[in-house]
Amino acid sequence: MTSKFPIEFIKELQNHFGEKIAEKTLKALSDKSSVSIRINPLKPIEEFSSDTSIPWSKNGHLLKDRPFFSLDPLFHAGCYYVQDSSSMILETLLNKLKPERDGLYLDACAAPGGKSTVLLDYLNDEGFLLSNEVDGKRNSILREIILKWGKLNVGVTSLPTRKFIDLNCAFDLILVDAPCSGEGMFRKDKFALTQWSEKLVQHCAITQKTILDELTPTLKEGGILIYSTCTMNREENEYQIQKLIESGDFEIEEVDLSDYQEHLIEAKIGEKTIGHYLLPGTSTGEGLFISVLRKKTPSENEDYSTKRIQTSFNPPNEGFENLYPQIPKDLVYWELKEELFAVKNHSFIEHLAIPLKMVGLPFYQMKGKNVIPLHGMAMANLGLPSIELDKENSLQYLRKETISLPQNLPKGWALVGFQNKSLGWIKIIDQRSNNYYPSWLRLRN
Image (tube, rainbow, N blue to C red; front, side, top):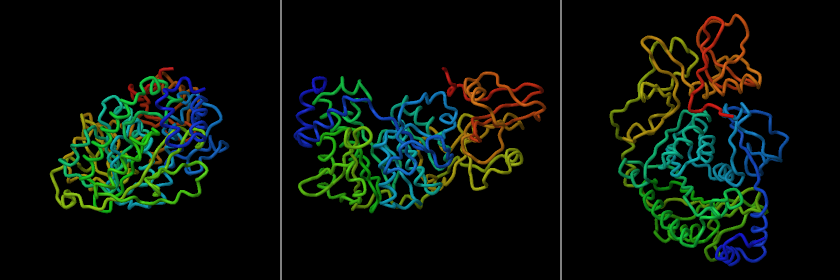
């Protein structure tokens, strides 16, 4: 059973957790990984209600089998996200910590985007989230997840963490789901197993410390730092937390997770609990370490929140307002490549000269006096009427193919949907329609 795992990894696992837990973890790592999803509360559905609930997630479900998610229109509508159940512990941490929702949050290493969706659900249209991913390809995946989730109080950046201090950022909460050696993902990601080495662990530990050091000055006094990895060794977890405490900038924020103690293993420095592990075989999902700290020292940028710079946020075009009077009036619009992105709570970032990849969601563009609706407005769940499609036609639409529509529909722009959840836009012309589903999202199977 253990022969496929590096001997150094096995020894550290045994030294860290003891023989019994190590054996249980190694056995689980040799089994099939679990499958779980988290429902988008903005777009509730009943499809998974009969599946096992995740104890620490109101919206999480553990599935018996892995369905073909790509052939489910509700997946493309952003009704749920396929997320490991261990990562969903963030939902309970936030609900117990109760950090102020009326604040500026940062998800520093955000791709693929699951934890950003948890933060957005907690913010519940209050505050603002910056979701950052420095890798270009992974940033594209992140933007897709944010787009489908449908929230407007979020911006996507692609910055090295050292840049945030120079941009006058002062955050109320920072999540660092740090790049790591991936030990907790061995059964889900075979590449993580083949690339593992003690040298990789040491390299990751250096990267993690650098990220934490660079972001520490950007967290406000009293602000929350949540640190997590999907690995299981002390070098990347306990020792990182110990260094933060020894710096004098942080103290441990204790969170009562006793309701879930059968699924958790306490991480300790001496006799003090400084975080928790969710391990394969003990928890319902893959391996995860998570710890919560509170900042004791001020950020040098805290006073910048009262300053303002000239921003590119503007009111909506009058023609757009007249065409869609249902759109909330508290939104402003940010232009990128002739597309207008609707943004909520922009005041949290209007004093920051941040280079944004996306902010809010793409709502419309103007071609002369004509308003062209964009996919973000479809994903924002604004209660706009839509033409109901069956599953076959929904998949045809998602492939950007011709769909069958009822007769005698009025000409012009219309939303199409599946089970009352919007999929995207069409334009009806005489007895046919043009499919405006974004090409870069097109279903290819």
